[in-house]
Image (cartoon, rainbow over all chains, first blue to last red; front, side, top):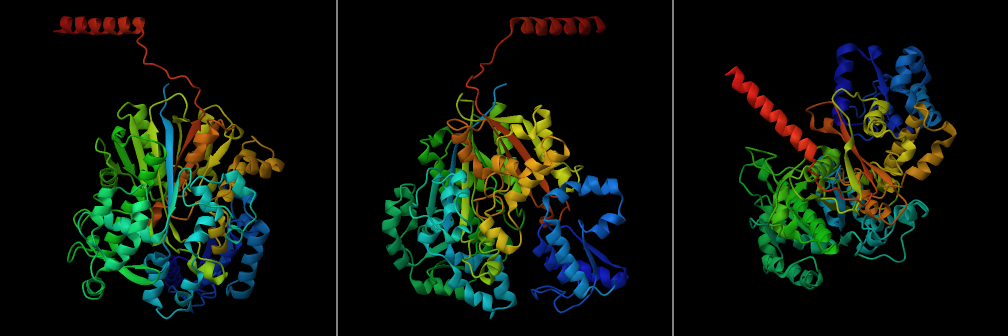
Length: 108
Length: 511
């Protein structure tokens, strides 16, 4: 995850409390989404940014996760994300995100 | 309507293995933050030889020796299936080795900032003399070189940027000012690399297509660096510097920037300038990005593969008046990601792909080839970025399903027919839509492509001035073969004169 984005996530978490933060991803690859989600839960796996060794345990979803889809207006979802549901490998991304949530999220 | 045409193209690569370690930001940042890292120790073991780079199929596509369709038939990963027959020279350009390029950097330096080792100059001289794109005058500019100790002192004591060849210090670039950060040695090296690689692309364009360089009226440079000083960081301009170097004495020029979208903007500008009659012949040119060398090197090393981002890219295109043969550039059928477009993928595809198609009264099936961000998936997939062109084609197809222009079951077939595998190095602006222009000329004159769309996108947010990104697109068409003359319609002239006289009379009455 971009070093500046790590700083932004860390600052927002300190300001609002980790239990009040949900991080939503839109990465097109399962691996990339997983790495980013790992960074804001278990810490930066590349040990390059401000979240290196910092286990925030934030709640994380991908924009194509069923939980997220169910929580937003269906028309808006269709308008904004519907096309990408035909493009992305949904199973791989959902599995990766579920694995991160199960292992590292502290607020579910 | 008389459109401008894409007349000729030049594409070049420069193999720069030492610059991967010395100048690629992934490596320079690692050296600063973790100088003893295992990655830095491993880099040299993952660099390819010049012959391997020449034999690498996507590189042969880039210079025009292998078609995109032929590349699609080669098993991936392509780095495991190098071509047996591959040459440095290609239909569109060439793959230059590092030693010749280092000499080119010196030849393009008009402020005596580059110093090269005497021994290195002696060794590379026969190769330069054999290179047909390098003139005798330029070789004279190279001089004899200086003693090694002088270079060592410039690097160790005077903040010069070192230049290595085969891991040996063979030269340096001095800073151009004592305190100006925009003229420091690092920036000067990056800018001289842009200029030199742009010149190589331009020279290949004119020499391989028998273009009289004096016929060129205007040059637009569209890479991603900026030249200037502390009072005007991006003052410019590379375009005129490159034009001067190649002898385009009747041209001036300017730089166009837009991150990776720079080339598509420049291409549309050039086509519009020619169509408007402002200029007859405009060249769009770009040099390569040193900073991006080895950008995904960590992932490549981790996956025990060669560091594939070991080449600089460059290109040059000539846009001219309609010749009745070359593909026409439909400047009336462009797509734009506007400020109000929004950032959802379907909004982006809608603005860049569907808008110009709908304006033309066509469907997505009527565009035979889409040239999107043509990044080489050998490079991006191991780095977790996926197959970028394929993802773009999937989005176009999915939009086709949503708009009921194709059936969902036909998506994969659509991608196969209307798409192409990516072959361009991940040098930002280099893969962005324009790598197909060389093939487009062939496919739309002697081949079976009647329409193509060139699409470029750019990550403006990286500059921290906006959260937006950007994109533009334009449709190319097979030339119908008729060059329309400017017709003077007698009735129209009479009407204009009558109107003018009437207005004059009314004015007199009012007075």
